[in-house]
Amino acid sequence: MTEHEKNTGSADTPDTQDTVSAVQADKQTAAGKKSAGKNVTEKAASVENSTTAQPEAPKRGHTPSEPPAAEKKPQPGFLRSAVALAVILLIGGGVWYASQANTQTLSQRLEAENAQLKSQMAQLQQEQVQNHKQMQEFISQQSALSAQYQQQDAALKHELDLLRSRVSALSSADVKSWLIAQADFLVKMAERKLWNEQDVITAMVLLKNADASLAEMNDPGLLDVRTALRNDITALSAVSQIDFDGTILRLNQLANQVDNLRIDDGSRDGAPMDSSDSEGLTSSVADWRTNLTKSWQGFMSDFITVRRRDSSAAPLLAPNQDIYVRENIRAQLLIAAQAVPRHQEESYKQALDSVSTWVRAYFADNDPENTAFLKEIDELAAQPIAMSIPDSLTSQPLLDKLVQTRIRRLLNDEAPPAPPVAEPQAAPAEPAPAEPEAAPKQEG
Image (cartoon, rainbow, N blue to C red; front, side, top):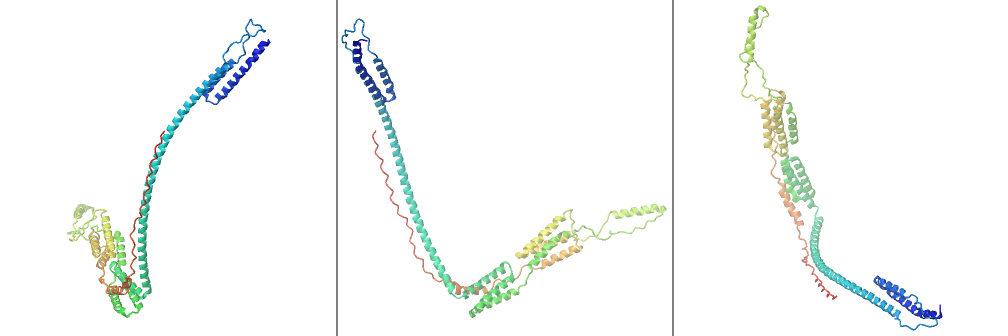
């Protein structure tokens, strides 16, 4: 290679280096952009690489000793810089346009979310106002109930104080008042036993206990009351006693004996009317005609039998009908047994009369067991089940008057008046908080 070529190569070397440095700067600038500018930068880099080729060889005909005339060539670095600048401007414009579109989208989303938040805020404020109103109503109701409970508590305390004062008065009073109250209670119990249950014995015992209570007081002022008690005891002792339990047991025993009664089957002893004894038959064969005639006459005489019956004959029962008769008799006996403790004498008499009628109508009157059964029924029918007890006790009015004068007057002493209780007033409701105004809408 000649010196001219070396000089030419050395002269072109700075331009090539400037071009390479410009391309590297463009690459570094385009690396910070988005992926869309990368392709353009790579194309620019390929163009720059193509321009960095070696310089052309000298034309033929020139000698190395003669340098070629200087030619005017375009500046390749400026062209490449212009292309890179245009690419950068395009990329920057695209990025700016995309950022503006994204900013507008974000602004719209923010406005929508802001409107939604305003709506939720208004709804929450409305719920808060409603909850505040409900809370005020609840507080007023609680205040009214509290006042009512206080009033009731004051009334109960007053009643309790009244009872305490009465109990204190009773405890400090004479013990004789309790004995008078006990005697009055015993006389009232005697009346209940006497008229509700007709239990004369228990009533007499209660009256004797009442007289003993008054005797324990050793008070001459109670002489008339004790005299009335003794008269009542004497009157009850004169009442005839009836064994109600024994009567019920006898009726139950008769009900168990119903199955042993014998039904009247219509059989009676006696010979037929107008019957004549036939002559005896002979054992002789020669008298066969006579014997045959006598036998025929005897058969014909016994073929139809007529017996004498009186007018009170009981009707005959059909087969198995006696079961119903026995059950009806047993039911009537149970009705009579139930009427005894209730002292229903009419029902008692009617039931026993029905039993007596049915036994005499359908059962044999000549049977010993039937006769004993009817005798027991007649004895029970003649026995009364109601006692003639006195209509009232002479000691009861006197004891009532004694209780009025000595006990109830003590209980009815005036008690301290109840303290006045103020009427419950509802608590004043607090003013509800005003609803806040909606925030002004921001302009986009």
